[in-house]
View 1 (spheres, one colour):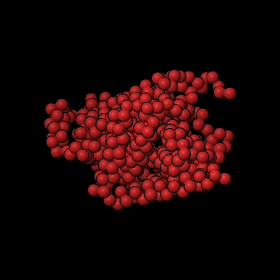
View 2 (cartoon, rainbow, N blue to C red):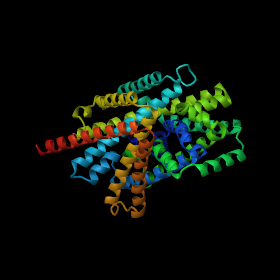
View 3 (cartoon, rainbow, N blue to C red):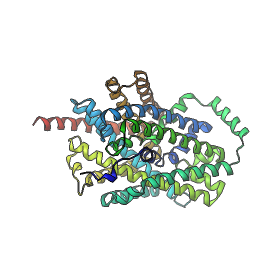
Length: 437
């Protein structure tokens, strides 16, 4: 019998869940990369990524209100295509590996900021080793107990936001770029930056908005899902887009562009150190470490349980469904191990772009599912069609950009997807055979 005091999550708590899932170090990671591609237009391109996220959120909201299933992404697609083992297997594999890529991204960001300013700041193997270590630290915490982490999660979310706000205000205060200089540079970048590059940045930064769907995982514990699911998800996406825009704007105003570009992985800490000294750098490092820590733990907690559920339906190795004291131990270990391999195989940009493509693809599949039952979910044909077009275009743009700039990385990403597709196809056939017998 459910305990009464864990019910009745209100709007404030639901927004905290979504914001906590989204602000997981993404802004610390995407800033330097975005500036390197579009200069002073980076804040606007990152905000445009928020617009894409809103269109993606539309289908999640409609499906969430219609199905009211805590299984969210996987459950929605499986229930929309109930007779297709292939559909259920594909969405299960893509969703889980999307979460694994964000685990790798958060850990890589944690490591980059953790060693910034030290003699090992540019040592790739030290960075990767520390990233893998922090993943296993939080895997151990999840295997042991998540009760303590759960109690302070809301507190950590709002502390993250406070630190980001303080960083932004300090950068604006200490920055030397005046409005005239900013306006002139912005006009120059507008005249010399291709619209295509802005769209590519918006697509690449999409992974920084991943996490709003975590609200739906709490559907059984919330008040009035019909009202609170849309309010929490839309409110959180808009709030996070605003936060990202403000901190990106403050950064380009205060930190020289060449510094942001040179120190992509830890651009904010390096820039803050130049302007505000050790105090500024330490504040940014604390913010990044806090943001990534809570995001790693939260993502591992939620996604490991989704992995166990998918495995229970035979679309992943069945051993991953086994639980010990309600904890999916094998799923947690499998996620930590796979994320570690991804960190070893690629750098920050590859992980970032693989994560963005994966969540664009998963969101595209959600939009297609919503389009299929749009009359049942009372969805706008126009909005759903725009979402499908935008999310599909975003996925293509990232691959095209990879092909033009780093074809070897695009090849690596395509090989990963080929392996995911092969695995999903194989387990779809296996699940079909099991159910037949």
